[in-house]
Image 1: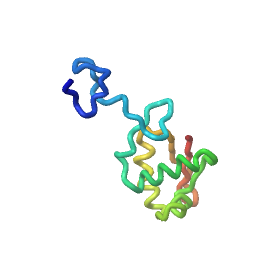
Image 2: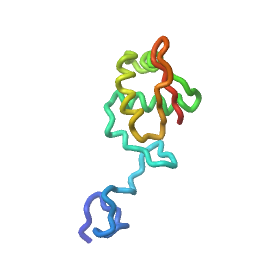
Image 3: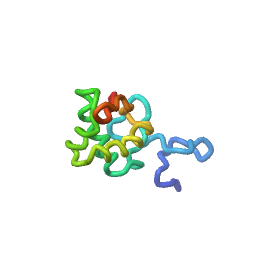
Image 4: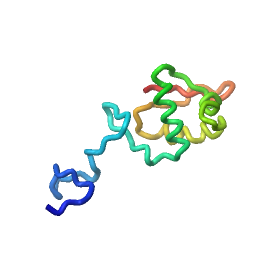
Length: 107
């Protein structure tokens, strides 16, 4: 059988969807999550931090995330956009602006 490298063998050329459905990513939820390969290193670092800390906490300040990861609050804020707009197993929304940006995180 002459198969393509990513072909899982379940679909024929006529029925194969336009994307591979058999790929599994760490931290998969019941809904499909976007691959983190589309994120920069800083964004992946922030996402991993939120996955870990979001189990115990809901609200995060950019400044405190930055302190934990060696980033500035501005770097955190500018990189959060990709996480907020992406389809990940972590939901992030801007929550407050007083004395720095607060993010509401749901894992």
